[in-house]
Amino acid sequence: MLTQAQFLEPLARHRTDQIVISAMSLVRAWGRLSKHELDFAFTDSAMGHAQSLALGLALAQPQRRVICLNGDGSMLMSLGALVTIAQCRARNLILFVAQNNTYEVTGNQTTPGAGAVEFHQIAFACGFPEAFHFSDAREYERALDKILYLQGPVLVAVRLEPGAEPPPNRKQTEDTPYLRGSLADAAHRLKQALQNEG
Amino acid sequence: MLTTRRLLDTLKQIGISHAVGLPDNSTAALFHALADDPDIYLITVTREGEAFATAAGLWLGGQKPLVVIQNTGLLEAGDALRGTLIRMRLPVLCLVSYRGYKSLAARANSPLTPDELSRRDIDSVAALLEPTLRAWTLPYELVSDNADAEKIIAAQQRAHEQNFPQVIIIAETIH
Image (cartoon, rainbow over all chains, first blue to last red; front, side):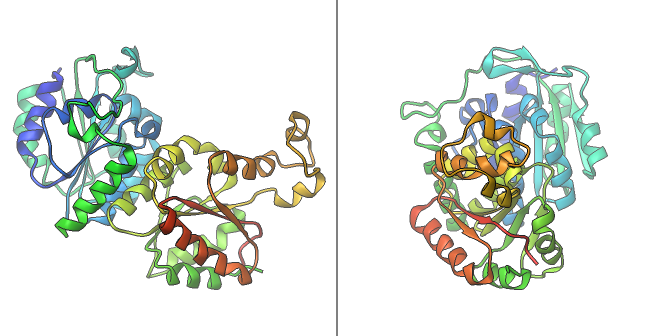
């Protein structure tokens, strides 16, 4: 089982110009590691829709890779989206599912099917050409560089220790810059950044 | 009568790049036409909430998506709509078909009551649609004929002026 740092720090080191969509407990954790203008904090993910926002971005920007950092609780809310993603053949989409078996931001209540759900198997069954699962930090880090450049869509399930992140609220005094300002400000900023980059 | 041809022409006129949604009986002809259309990319989803989030991502990425769902799906997807197009203030058009529209003739023009929502002759999703849109502060227009196509063009213009989603309610089956 990995710690949150063992999951996110290698990803931050390998990340180049990909769009990164984060949700729920991963929002602040990612914001502590990255200040990239193509980071987007989809704070509450509208109850489990981060992967669909990422799908839209991936289809709109086929020349750019899109990384989605999702939680297992959020993923369970919209498993059907995996079918949609596979159907759309979003080759540039990499969906990480942080599997800590809890609803972390509400105090680590156990998720349905905790420990039993194999997200990578579900992804394969939905038609993903590539899916992985990791519970060892060294294996994960060794594979990461290759995974980030595979033809997707790719799902990567990572078994994590439960953490203690609070809900990712937006306020002006936030340490993580991408949590300052409203969701609308952040959304329009991301669109502008993508336009600027062409 | 509202025809697929006129609707598609109008959507192309306002530059729609993607249609994201789920079909129902009254939009079936439109979905068939979109599936064969070379200019508008059709994405069918498994639940309506996905449609709003996917459309949001498409818009952020520089595309001009349209959401097409039934009023039942709109109610199911309320929080997805709130958390994406509304909270992000995205000027995305949503075509919502009006299941049960004709059943509304059986009810009085007065605030809804619990009894009305359980009556056999009134489709409760029809009765709830417009009050729900008003509660969510979503501007909407009813479209039922080719002559109403101008309303779609005007709604797209308003979406851009207000940076806010707009709803087009399709009150009749599209032919």
